[in-house]
Length: 98
Image (cartoon, rainbow, N blue to C red; front, side):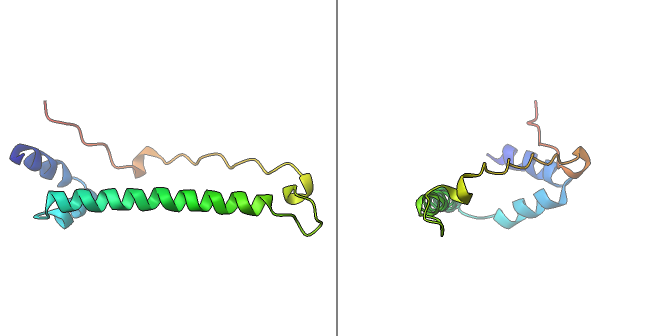
C-alpha cells in the first residue's frame, strides 16, 4: 500500500488539482472514505431517478389545452451535441508504474 501511495503522490506533484485532492484525503480512514463515496453515489442515483419520475409525471399531465401531448404534439428539439474539451485543458490520466 505504501508504494501505491508514493506512486500516486509522485504523479500528483505534477498536477495541482490532483495534488490538492490527495492532500485533502491524506490520513483519512479508508473505510470512512468508501462509505462517503458509496453514500454520494446512492444519492446521485436517487436524485436522477427522482428527476426522471418528475419529468415523466409532468409529461403525462394534460397541457393547458387539455391534450396529453407535450408541446401540443410538436416534435421535441434535438439534444445538443456534446462539447469536446481540448486536450490542453484535460489533466492526463496517471499511468501505473511498470
